[in-house]
Length: 264
Length: 258
Image (cartoon, rainbow over all chains, first blue to last red; front, top):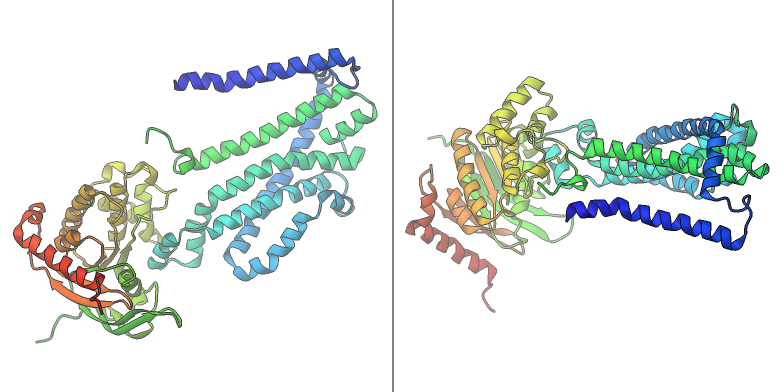
């Protein structure tokens, strides 16, 4: 019964995917739209193969910017959350401003960031950081505040000092929250980097990233290549999410209830 | 003749939270070394508060409380607390959980490991030392919790309904094991429970408490000698004590009609 189900978990998406591609061809044939408005999957794949050197180089560039911004957000987010989670007065004085930063659309801040950080990789990393920072801080701060009060009492009974309480209790207890924040950030980081590259245009240096390719293919009306860029961005996003999912598994599967197996 | 200094001494102790209602009204109690005292009574009678006061987790309002001759907080190195749930850290193995009190006091790794291993053997869990809490049953978790509490060989053990969430068979077995462990590593115990038979089986003194405000209603001496064997539960003397405590509980739970 269980085996039957696991076959369905890949068979069903495959069938729905085939139906979708069939509909795609159907629309193309019935509507008579031209290739540059609605390319077929085969035309997109052909464009991807044709442009693969540019796409791969651009994907590498974007991955670098996304990773830089993501790591910056993960590190700064960790320390910001420690400050917010452990001091009530710091939380009260800083949180509203963090919220305000989050509420300001990045698109509005982009020219200012480019002006201050410079138009190349520094600007792209800053934008990526800005977009993925808040979910990490919000999650981890909540986690640091959710420590089991009996565990805290246990530590107090053992005369634990403040540092021991933070490092041996509050931080490990908040780890699942931190990882949840990182998971959201991982979906946002490639988007942030591509957006940054799109905004800086050809000033992003080198080959430019996927965001620059979007700009470039669009002005050249290379629509199948644009679709191929979308596909590449999507794959890059998956790589980020998969990496964090692996980290999540590596750190939690032994003890956390979310990985509870049926045989226990 | 000079009497032995008490382990815990309450002198006219009163507890209220701020200007709220009185939680505990004028408690007087002297706990002698090796006493096993159970506190039993309706909810809201302040029996858990007594343990919080002794552990120094919560301060008294008026009156005096000394633990081993000093203020509660200063006696923390010689006492341990066992909570209602096992309060194991889920990200640590059983072994590392038992090591926590030693780790927090900066003891060397080698000492931590040998002591924790010895304590796990004492509660019969050496085989699952490397298991995580979620892999253990409720009874096993509580045994790990007991092992953890005993790592520093405390003079005084505070137990807040430790077996309340377990089924009766497991509870009975853990009662027997607790007394067996106590024979190896002696301690004075203050034990909060809702179970009369558990209190009679474990204790040499039972304090029956009343609520609103929390106060002592009566004290019953249980003088069956230790070690106590499981078949004690079937004896008429045991049943008589259970009946006596149950009757006292009825007095405080059903107030006389006015």
